[in-house]
Image (cartoon, rainbow, N blue to C red):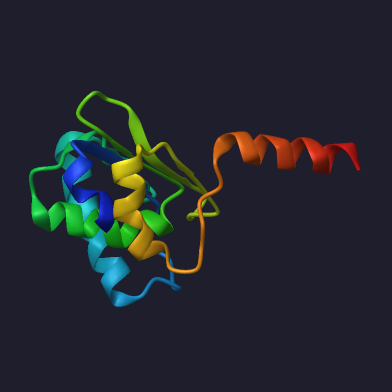
Length: 133
């Protein structure tokens, strides 16, 4: 989904948890790249946990690492040119919030495949119905 929004993203950030045994080599390499960024734009804690801080979307190498790693992060967000969040990932992509205009939505459709995004109004109605049962 992130790859489909590349042209709309101006800034992004993520955290990088300490390395995990279930990370594939490409995820581990992406984490290393983002940790190096965090050393200059964010912070790294003693246990290895890092936060990149906001990164300008002007490096294809760092963006590629972010795209690979974001689903493994506890928190990752991308912003547009006005500073509006477009996508936010939480808890290893257990929760994804998207705030997209029609053009951006159309650009991520090919990546979504059979999955679908649920509009906030519909999601609120579903959540309300679940709570009432």
